[in-house]
Image 1 (cartoon, rainbow, N blue to C red):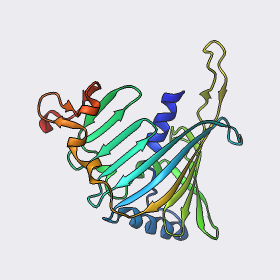
Image 2: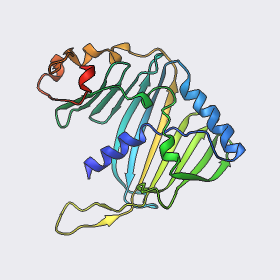
Image 3: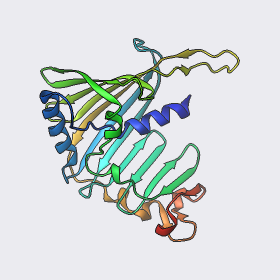
Image 4: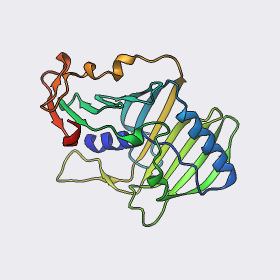
Length: 241
């Protein structure tokens, strides 16, 4: 159950809406939002991830806190509960403190700039857009052939063009029972709330390889002192080692 929730969070952390093929009103909002996230300036905000058992439930099943930090080079650092992620110009690092494991890979180009996830929107359609006093609400509905685990995604975009809230309604049942002999499956709802947006100078140490490794070369990378007992999983392309 917890592993499933982590996968949800890591995927959702990169949610940014693309800007093509929709009504003029929605298109204008999304274009401005894309520009806001694509600016070559620092960006920081906090996130709260809350999982509910059903679409209407008010009882929290799981909750985690996170932080998103982008520097002027559009490199990204994130922390979600016990997981850290760095995507710099030279390396992609994922650290699971709960599993004491470090995964190292080549940089993911789609993490830079506006974090375009157009493939997701190719599988969704905009069902509605509403203009409230302080934000726009855009509802995305999964297309029948999409195979997405969601039936609907609702996004709140502030008048300053930041994503303040995302609500994911799952079409895939999840077993919430702790007893494998007696499964209890429900269709959950995940809410992600982002707050404290700012463009203040960031801690550049978070984006330096030395913060994570003593050495990164063709051989097995050597973790920094604070991570010395962690397993290293090297998934880099051999030509980049």
